[in-house]
Amino acid sequence: MSEMTFETPNGAANNGVANKSLFFRRWLRNPLQMGSIIPSSPALCRKIAAAVERSPDEYVLELGAGTGVISRALLAAGVPADKLIVVEIVPEMAEFLRESLPGVNVICGDAFALRQALPAQMQGRIGTAICGIPLVLLPFERQQAFRDAVEEVAPGKGFLLYTYCATSPLPYGKLEMSGRRMAFTLANFPPASVWRYQPAARP
Ligand SMILES: C[S@@+](CC[C@H](N)C(=O)[O-])C[C@H]1O[C@@H](n2cnc3c(N)ncnc32)[C@H](O)[C@@H]1O
Image (cartoon, rainbow, N blue to C red):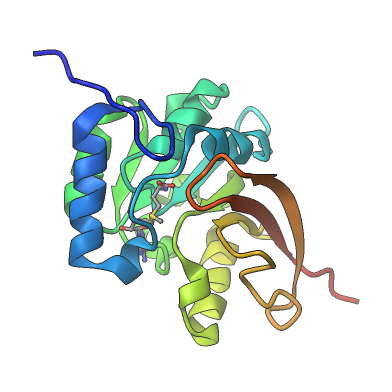
């Protein structure tokens, strides 16, 4: 049976009913872990993909992939499936990603424990890390822990973070990072920005 597609408030016709109903069910179970009631819009996903930097042998690491809307935008933007690593903590969602993203490295694990979660040969070979976890809702110590987890597997790279906040969702000075808004779109519910955070150069 072919899968039905339909329009959501985010304009997505991007993987049918299963995608949105799984996302919504998970939001009902754990709103803080999900951070959003619906997946990111195609416009936001494209803006995130456009901010990705990688050399041909480097990986893109997506943390908190949900139902894979950004993963699909990354593939559409030319990231080879075998150079995309997606990490998702909810087993049911990781299984959905495995089934719907053939060839992609899907890891069911914790983005705060990346050294344990990622195969050794992928560590230190990441061009861009993308964070889908709602870091703004977490206490400063957890934000620091996330920064350190990314630094362990992608030294010096920092990460992209998308957010509904009007200003930076992270206190980047306090985190000893630089922060820059890379993109903004009204075509998302709610409107969203993409920020790049990088470890501050030490004197
Ligand atoms: C706001 S949703 C983003 C989903 C998708 N990337 C999108 O843009 O629609 C956040 C996702 O992060 C996942 N997540 C939350 N905490 C996590 C963690 N510690 N490690 C890995 N994934 C996590 C949630 O299960 C959820 O799928």
